[in-house]
Length: 231
Image 1: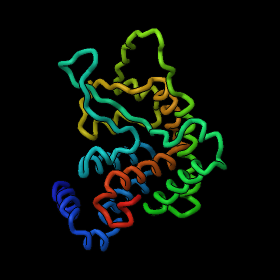
Image 2: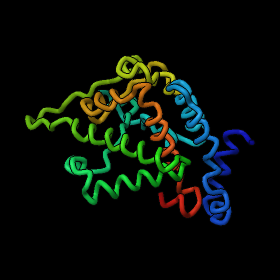
Image 3: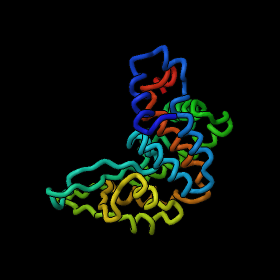
Image 4: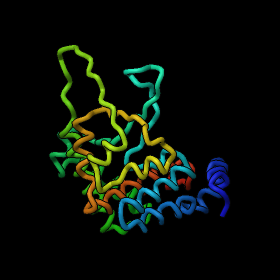
């Protein structure tokens, strides 16, 4: 095994070598998937994600990824824009599990989870959990203000994240991937973010492990085999 720099270079150098990619299959991601699978609590999951982020890049963070943006309150400063799970369906689609849209989307989740090593039973259970999270997020989108007033976005700190999601210990993850302890963060929708935060419990650890494994696959599938690149 080489250094993190050598490993990510090897992954990217394989991009144009389709024969090598097809031969390797999921192997380039296997050690990261295994580290996620071994996690017995959020601290261990955070450590696994941090390793993947430091060696592969920010796309390896499937729990609460973030991108640097200009602070709307101070254009001379950068803040971190946090992301949540993005509902893949319209709100109404989650109300009808028998609809074609619901079934097709769920089947896609199951297929991805099987591709990262889950059994069919596990994949279906976790797909249902992901659908439940997304349904909840779709139900908690903040209503637009018709008054024309510009809403001042709230800054979040690592301490605030730990208060909102004490079991997730997100400050561990954020500092492990290199963020400063005084980093300021924003979210797109405070109401939706608060709803997402409530899912971060030890009871849902296996579900978030599944989400992280999917993030590794979707974030780097373009560097893998033909079949995986289509996931």
